[in-house]
Amino acid sequence: MNAVALPARANRARAYWLETRNEFLRLLRSPSFAVPTLVFPPMFYTLFAILLNHKGGPQVATHLLATYGVFGVMAPGLFGFGVAIAMDRERGFLALKRAQPVPAGAVLLSRMAMAMVFAVVISLLLMVIGMTLGHVSLSPAQAVTLVLVDMLGVLPFCAIGLYVGSIASGQGAPAIINMIYLPMAFLAGLWMPLSMLPPIIAKLAPLWPAHHLAQIALSVVGSTSDGRTGLHVAVLAVYGVAFGLAARRRLARG
Image (cartoon, rainbow, N blue to C red; front, top):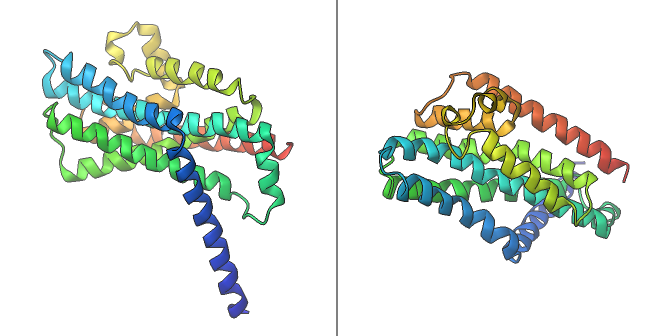
């Protein structure tokens, strides 16, 4: 029994590894995804936290390091799932995968892994810029925790992207994702503190998952936060589970 189980487990693990490797290679060969995802957050952070930050100094650079990190990790989840799943579903790729001897969930888990890898890279790029050019001071524990927050924080956006990909066409998905991505970043206070925005936006900010992830990141770097980390984690978990289950139900119907 054990002799049979071990090769089966090895084959299953190899299938997951191959799916993850192929997904990584696919994204590297898709500059339309990889380049904007990796370049835009550091570029915007450098512009607003370094070049245009004439009076705020390291305090503003630290605050924006947390919020632009959230802005950066939203993209791999939303676009990596929303657009890719929509196109794969439209082309029949997902149906083909189901017909092959591929472990259930291998495709989704491989894409989640790649979204987390992109999130880590984005977080590290922003941190290097902040600590070298913006004079941001983080302890080793803060730096590691912030990277972990960004890495795990991409998962609710993977679920949202997956749901969009399950209902939208390949051509319509990019437009829908952009209508979610950019307005949410603004309304959640990622580009500028909520205190600088109209009061109505600050009151509605808790509706968006990006706001809750930003509050966790801000608490890590010691910037302004409401101190309700447990609540923010719970809200993000609810978003992830709700959209994940809705997408699974939709994809199961084909």
